[in-house]
Image (cartoon, rainbow, N blue to C red; front, side, top):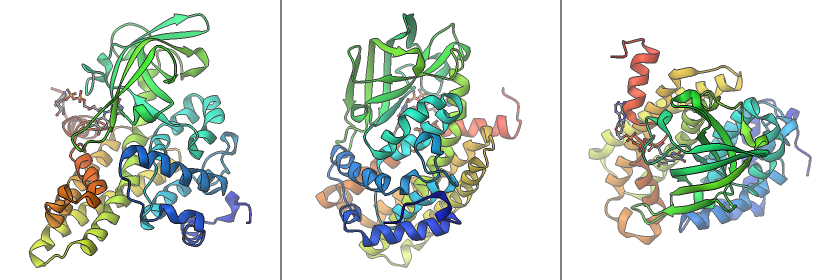
Length: 379
Ligand SMILES: Cc1cc2nc3c(=O)[nH]c(=O)nc-3n(C[C@H](O)[C@H](O)[C@H](O)COP(=O)(O)OP(=O)(O)OC[C@H]3O[C@@H](n4cnc5c(N)ncnc54)[C@H](O)[C@@H]3O)c2cc1C
């Protein structure tokens, strides 16, 4: 096989066409096309094979800098990879979404960590979680209480995190802790190993029976000083920088899924004219999300800083995700909940109910748009 390099592809469209051809024709990709996960743990194990395949063949390394083990080239190739996978009905491995949020931050604030760790993440040999929220600190994140105390060549962590997506399947976590006084100026971002004494990760079972999240109890877990992301006390700035990917890049990845599910729903469930309004509504919102986040992805690729307007991406995502799964449920009906073959889709439906909460709640995003984008008074 020809070795892939950045100049093999003139455009994301050329890359997409070549990747689709590879996935359709290589028998090693077959187990991933149309794969339906019986549960999250099975998906994590199974899709690691896909990660290894497209890493070893070079596809997932395009769009990442060569210094980090990537093959260089336009960062929009990464966005094209996600769209191509959805178009072929291939589930995006969860670690891809996490690294698409976390690694761009490392490239700016801790390039040594991106250089060291990106290949393992991309290949599926390593998995990370994000541990910001605490039982008493969600929307009001700056009030978090997990402490970070100096110890020799590093720091020890004490406190409790909650709602870490895929925490129990992750080897490490990006974590926000308090290294100084109260408020956002006292916060620092670190990368902590979860497989050590002093870090106890306990899965939380959600209503669909799946372990979507974890609690993380920290009682002296050690973080070497090289694992600080940015400077001590710079954690809030790092977290705010991260939001561009958490809201923008995430929205792009998800819109591919919404389009695919709407298309599949029409094939799976007979529908008539009475339903056309709800399908049209969901499709319109998914299309709006696609257009807006495409622009966001282009701007991120040009290294523009987006600021608070990225809340618009999140608000469009909430509407599109909610409407897509409302219409899927309406059309598939009770089978969605009772048919074991539909369990994987029911999981997606249940997850969609959390769209107005995860990554920053609906109310907080609307307030940010009103105050920070439109300049309305804060009181
Ligand atoms: C599916 C999912 C995945 C998640 N994954 C992660 C993860 O990987 N890592 C992580 O750290 N966290 C994660 N979270 C946690 C998420 O970030 C928080 O749930 C979210 O920030 C809201 O915080 P909270 O749950 O404490 O609710 P609260 O902040 O207590 O909010 C409760 C309600 O009050 C409203 N509210 C709060 N403050 C205001 C205000 N000032 N003005 C108006 N309304 C307000 C909110 O909008 C919300 O409706 C996840 C959550 C979900 C649902």
